[in-house]
Structure formats: C-alpha cells, structure tokens
Image 1 (cartoon, one colour):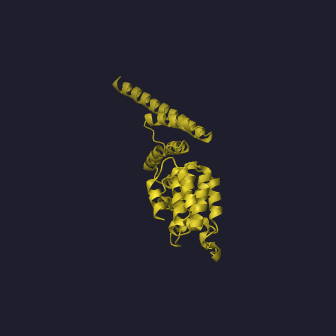
Image 2: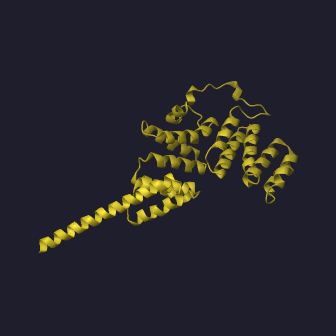
Image 3: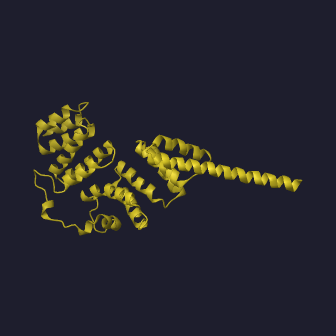
Amino acid sequence: MGKRSKSIKKTQKSRQIDELKKQQEIIQADIQKHLRQEEYGEVINKLAELIQQKCYHAESMYAGAYSYYKLGDYKRAADWVNNTLTYAPQHLAVRILLGRLCLQDNRIEEALQVSEYVLEHGKGILKDNQLAELHEMLTSYAEMGAIADASDYPEVRKFLNLDAEVKTSANVANDDEPVSGVQDCCRQTLASVKPLLEKIKILNTFAAGYYMSDDKASAEYLLAEALKLDCGHQGTLRNMAMLQIAKGDKDKVQEFISKMDMPDFVLLNCLQRR
C-alpha cells in the first residue's frame, strides 16, 4: 500500500504540473493576443497573473515592457526590459525597445550601442517590421550627425548606407538658412510614431548641437518646429529665447519670454547684458 500511495501522489503531482503548464500557456497566448490588438492594459494584467505563478516567460515579459512603453510609463517599461534581459539576454526585440528608451532619456550614445549589438547579432534573424523600426529610429540621428566617424558603429553605418552617401558643399550653411538635410530629418522625426514629448526632446537636442556649432539658422528652424508641436513648451521657449539673445534680436527675445509661465531671471540678465 505504501508504494501504491506514493505512486498515486506522484501521478497527482504530475497532473497538477501539467495542468499548471496548460494554464500558463493559455495566459501566454492571451498576452500575445492582447498585444496584437493593442490592448496594453490587458497585457499587463495577464502578465501579473503569469508572474504570480512564478512563470518568467521572456516573450510575455517583453510584451509587458512594450505595453508599458506604449502607455507612456517609461520607468516600468525599463524595469521589464531589464527583467526580460535577465531571462533572455539575446532577446533582440527587447533590445530595440531598450534603444528607444535610451533615446527617450536622450542617451543617444547608448542607443547607438544597443542598435549596433542588435544589427550585429540579428543578421538573417530580424523581421521586416523590426528592421523598419530600427531604420525609423536611427535615420534622423544619423543624418543629423550623431554618427560622425567612419569607425563608429560599422553595422549601423552599413544598415543606413551612410558610407555610400556623398558629402557636398551644399551641407555648409550660411547665416540665414539651415544646413541641407535638416528639414528632411525634421520631417522624419515629426512623421514618426514617437510620443509627442519625445519628438520635442529630439528637436531640442539637435537644435542644441547646431547651436553649439554656431549654426543658429538650423537651431532656430528645429526649435520653431518643436513649438509647432507645443507652443507653450517651457523648455523650447527658453531655448528659443536664449538663441534670440545670441542673435541679438531683443524684440524676439521679449516675445518668447512673454509666452513663458514665469519670468526667467537668467534670461532677463542675459538680455540686460546685451
């Protein structure tokens, strides 16, 4: 009887494990279904059920990270990216999402490093939609000069066909016109699926780069496009006011300062010194 009792318990335990596994597979399938249907809240709820059962399924965790990203909760998205990479370090889709999160935080160098890894390890594996996402994510940064040296990120350069591009004197700006290509890059950023605040941040970031290289026309163009997205964005208004101070246009400085929520003593001080 003792042996028979142990055998029965063993069979029952095996059935319980099989039943639990089936339940988890159903939840995993539900997560993918909700993800396809862009029901991101449901994805997160189902993922919580899966984790409660101590099932750490990489595709489901990636679905959770992506859902948090689409819902604008970038902190939790980053947490679930890290969780996914803990259990699946080679997961390429989650690394693409990591690249997006790096760009969201203005960590361009890290985003390019991640993209280089994905392209290097994803040869022949990446799907068309993933390649398209990478191309959309990288193009504006590359064309605005984020990849300056031929030795930087060879896979990214090859992917974007940068080394085949011919640089001409048309890329040299005068004092009144933005450099050639800035408008195209700006249009690509505006047409992308990035969140509104990310687009504004991108435009301000590259405006800062042109400002530091003394290309005020390109910087002004990018800031003006950012203000079209949000005419009351305080950071953009402040940057535009600083740019006008550098240009010596006091009337425009006053115009942008007047649109800010509160007086900015730093701007006023800079204006007084002119």
